[in-house]
Image 1 (tube, rainbow, N blue to C red):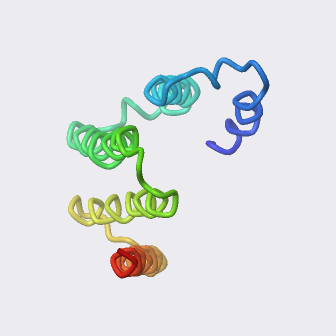
Image 2: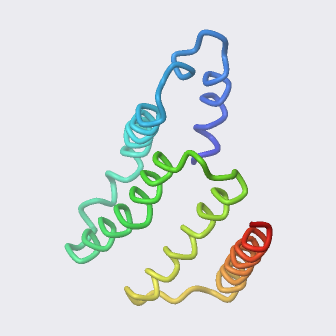
Image 3: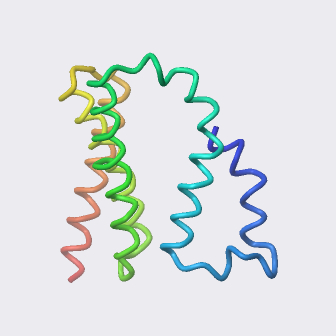
Length: 133
């Protein structure tokens, strides 16, 4: 769904004179979240009555700890190389997978392999960066 929505929005960001070019990072993140809510609400509203209280708690924890908190942290890290920031973003998926194990859902083997690759890359990046300094 994100790709479908991103196709018409992406050119609007880079159009000369676009309102998006004059926004701060905090404002851009706020608009991104609001637009996502507006676009996805019709699809989620059909299943909302079927979600239990425990599932709402799990969704809230997943949304706050594994989505909102990392996105907010990106607002405050300005001096980080793009390579390091992208690895931090990749690790969000690993953390979310670990959370799924905590709530009783086990990942398939391809997810475990992908997580291993991401963690290995993060460790390698940390090692190489440490040797350069």
